[in-house]
Amino acid sequence: MSTIIAETALRELVNTWMGQGKHVAGPTEVRDDVVLYQWLSRAEDLRIGGSPRPRNSIKEFVFPRHEKLYGYKLEGRKIELVETPLPETEQIVIAARPCDAAALPILDQVMNWDYRDVFYNRRRNLTTVVTLACQDHDAHCFCTAVGSGPDDERGSDAMLFNLGDGTYEVRCLTDKGKALFAGALQPSERVGEVGPGPEIRLDLDSIREFLNNEFQSPQWAAMTMRCIGCGACAYECPTCHCFDIADEKVGNTGARVRNWDTCQFAIFTAHASGHNPRSVQSQRQRQRIYHKFEVYPAKFGETLCTGCGNCSRVCPMGLGVLPVLVAMQGVEQVEPSEYV
Image 1 (cartoon, rainbow, N blue to C red):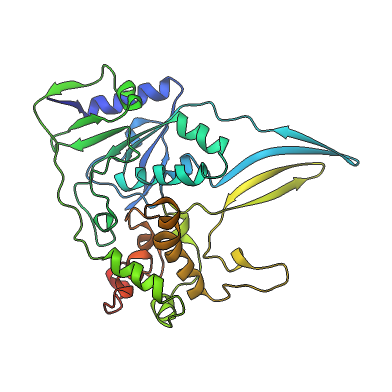
Image 2 (cartoon, helix red, strand yellow):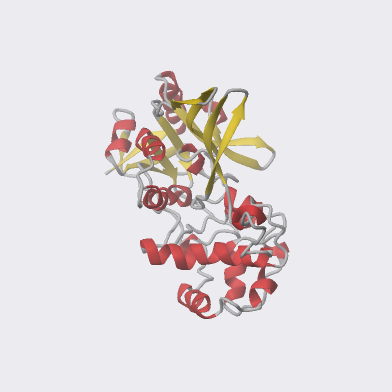
């Protein structure tokens, strides 16, 4: 026995959640063929049909691009610190891709490794994630190669399966998911299905062998020479989590803030002396791949990548993780046009 909900009822439920004071985010078409996860002001703006592929990720709802850690006031030589209150509003992310939600347990480990990040954890506790199982995929998708799939349940509190006639099977996976849909579902004998997902084009064992033996290989420059260092790949990646901390001051008041950063920026590893141990872009691309497929797995036991394909979708040069990994396996370099 399964449980289902009609799309009309689901949209009414979204409006109900917002009426209760909850913040709700989901895929929204901002212009032709451009979909982003954004806060919703009305359920009609939710893009849920098919398998929407937002260009950004849902990490920004638990790990904002810009975040105030605390404020301060200056009076002569005296400094008064002003605490930033923790978030209090419940938030719901609906129709997220499974590969986006699967990143959240990965980020949980980073944010609770040697220090428990109170801001991140508060947002995570306030957030309920409803995913939409993928019905199709494109050339950028490679979730199956990194142990995921079109109905990966990691990070999801509930999952929707499109039944194709304006109704969805709803699988409540956690207590949060059950509470969210309590009283809104109808029993049914219908069960949602998904396809096998993208063909596996990567062999992680051969990739790890390359990483273990070819750190100084000239192939890194050949594989990544078209990277322009814009950082779009990291900003739209569900699992990239580098940040910088800076003071922003106006007059006698200011704040210590956390901003997203990326190893793809030239200044990321620049020393005060002027020396930069990663002075060329191929070294920075190499760092990103090593972090995802060697450093993070050695530390936490899983890959720092969910195979979402966001990086190659947004890359103006048609690069991203997948083309680099394909080339790393000894396969002929993939042309940018295949991924653009």
